Image 1 (cartoon, each protein chain N blue to C red):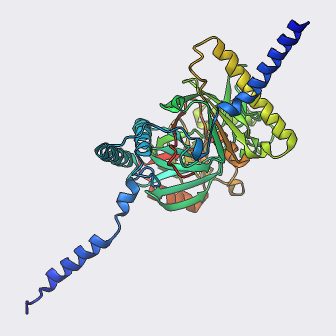
Image 2 (cartoon, one colour):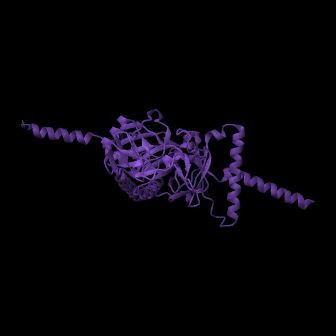
Length: 222
Length: 212
């Protein structure tokens, strides 16, 4: 019988324990935990998005990742998720136009309350409820993101208004296309989210903010 | 007459085409109609893609703060101190009111009382801070701006500690604890005394502050 040194026994047990412990740090490394690593298209798209995100995360700023594959909008900084909100539905004019980093140049205006000097200091502040729930976001790249709240489609009148806006938007795109190469479709992404999330997104956006978009493949789970 | 009917029909067809266009041209969020990217069939290409993805994931994770950082949600008026994914401190805060105040004598210029969004660093840690009232504080109260700097100093209104994060913005205490959870400040972030002490203890000069 081989005499067992207690110290060696202790090291062996610890080694065995460590080998069995799930690598939690490794989990943290996964940028897209639900990614199907066996789907080349999905992996390629995830890598493309990561290349773009790395540039943004290297600088002191917050940015937005619109993940169409997982139907989630992420507000991030330094690769850390600060907040996220689900996307109900989405539709896109041209998938190719969604690549790259898009800088926000126009966002919905907010009616701010003006302080009257000498009056009570407790004047009505702005709140999430003051934020619009249906709006367009314009980007330097030419991309337009239309944010529509799901409530807007709830009633017949609101549904008609929503369709009317979509129709008018298409007329404008069509008119704009006359003056340029008509083979290039207008870059246009439509997101339908809840009222709360639409207002929350409007609140979080700042001028010049960068947005990147992850596109799904047909193998992504919706 | 037939030309008029023909032209009218053409216009009607055009209008219907435009009206149908938004839905017909959109790629909906359904898997069956998603556009297929070029398929990489070669297994070695797949392995290369997987390796690239893993490398990029690792690079991104290395940019994450490995020290405690402060996260401020201005919409919901919450402040968190986080260490990686762990929430070390969760506090109700007050952040910027979003209101505006005209600058006297300048019709085009205003103060906007927003809490700035983005990433900042703790630049200073103060104990028993004194508030040096800026011009807007006097103008908002309908008072004249004092010429003497000493007349701007106000003791005891910022709590026991203050953490500066640049351009005059601070995380500090408040006398108005009933307003915590609301957007009422001029851009600073207010906390109650115990949460302020916790943040002061956990944060160092250089601690990142992410505000959205």
